[in-house]
Image (tube, rainbow, N blue to C red):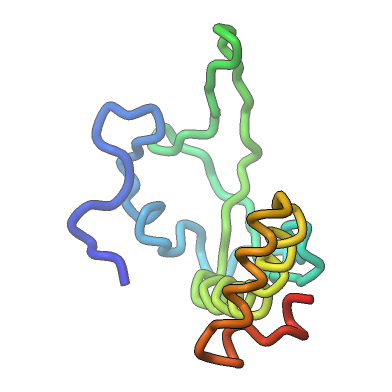
Length: 139
């Protein structure tokens, strides 16, 4: 679990906010507010449920993302939505990680160059726990 001593960017950082709830993953909209449940896959075929809700934007929130690309300044105004139902979200993220890590390993293994692929497959064979690297999960 994360310590609450240092949460979020330092003061003066472009992403810094005076609303510390953002960094502690606490609710920043009212629980009774209307929310929408979405399912995302991160390209790994497994779904993760996320909840989003509209919130009232005030000056304490950073809703514009600014970055540099090839010496050109770019900006993107973000929509006034945030993650909601944080307890369910945390559980959903944990379930997603638990259920999809083998898909990530499979993807890394088969996208690797031949030498790296052989090393990963050999590590699979030599691993001490069938539950961690079972060949049917990777191959």
